[in-house]
Image 1 (cartoon, helix red, strand yellow):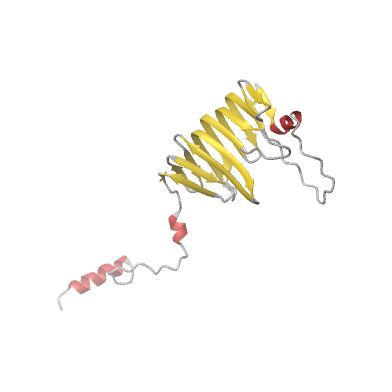
Image 2 (tube, helix red, strand yellow):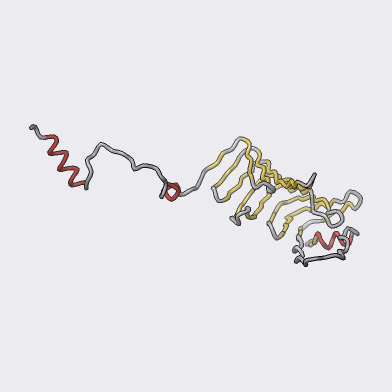
Length: 201
């Protein structure tokens, strides 16, 4: 079994973050991302990439990912991993921005991260029978893109089933009560009023 820690790997490859000397407030270090695989791992130190094979497991503080093949760019000096491709039997478990669980499956997942002109772009694109189950219920389509920076999900050719408690959503609204043609009162009163109205004068 291969167990690799991206932070330790970055240090071994000479990609460690520069030391900070003017620290105003100490920030707790982010726990490392742990990647394990039952097969070999191939590192390309020139291209700064690594490929894992056979029952790949990624354990990150923000998500858990399982797949059969994974390629990741190694982070540059103190940077963020900016590109990951996971393929075959992809399973992702994470939480959305409100802390609610999100479960996704697909044949392929592509993670992209970039900071450009002060704006952060962070997306997860699922293809090949992608399905997501979150607080709103199961969703599927041809392509599912989760924009993590904006907390939005875009689905091409969506197929979804909303699982909401609509009774609870409608309670307390300003909707007027439904009108009927029946006189006010209990069932017995309605029967009595109907019988009275039906009698000839």
